[in-house]
Image 1: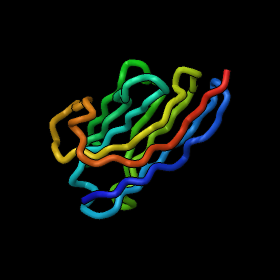
Image 2: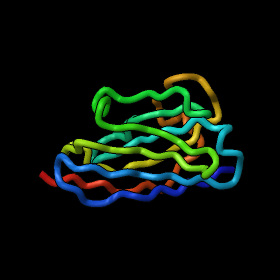
Image 3: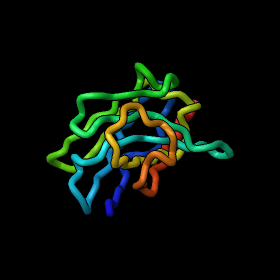
Length: 125
């Protein structure tokens, strides 16, 4: 079992930046590819970014490519999402998720076995 806890959300003006963190406990963190998803009110949860087990490969949704960066520190059991040039449409609850499989570019929610509780990001115009 893996427990995931997100932090770093908040309220920011459009054009600003936030850095989300997700810290894992329970099992060997480097055994899992990690992803970030988000869910806006009234919408389905959607893929944002994914990073491979050792951090060598990253994948992004087109909507965030060039603005968001996913990274991880396996010594600290933490995955990060640096979000720059934020837009009001980025407003959502952001979730980190763990995937047992190393298959590249898995973007569906049911591909991920472990989930955090989410952290709210609100971008004002």
